[in-house]
Image (cartoon, rainbow, N blue to C red):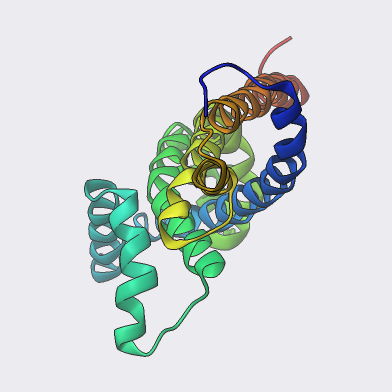
Amino acid sequence: MGGNWSWDFTLQILPRLIEATGYTLLAALIGYLIAMVLGLVLALAQRTPWRVLTLIAREFVEFIRSTPLILQIFFVFYVAPQFGVRLSPWTAGMIAIGLHYAAYLSEVYRGGLESVEKGQWEAATSLNLGTAHCYRRIILPQALPNCIPGMGNYLVGILKDTPMLSVIGVAELMHTANAIGTETYRFLEPFTLVGLIFLCISLPLAELVRRAETRLRRKLGLVK
């Protein structure tokens, strides 16, 4: 129960934390994939000529961005069952994270789309190209490179927000570390290791995003 670091205890708990790291990465990955797809849908919905759809998408984004993630997690897991929607902690957690970050990514996408010159739209219109074809072939390829930095930042952010899933019993890193501390009355080692694990994942991930951005811009001829 002392405050001194125990290497024997560290080696003993490390396998549990490594296993929890896998679950954390899985939750972050699936949540981010949901956010990427839904975020693009929300961004495109705000650019349609149908005002009702635009208004619904815009208000949804503002509502999600104006409320805390932990409240959204509680709502999906505890409130949704009152309406007949019962989800496991894992499913509820990934949906909540996906919805939360979809709102932020929609703004990233929107900024990227608005950075494309209006002349591109005019040229596509003059060629009688359909809206879907125009987005897929002309607009999105030019918009996405400008979205990469923001998307990368939110990828790191979603990884660091996965500990919030512990409030509904998802066995990610923080939940596992807290369980170890409760069982052994030693919190120094598990929480320190969790911090180091997040650091070891986040730093290379941020560098990978920067490299991906540079490579994509070079491939598209935007930089030499």
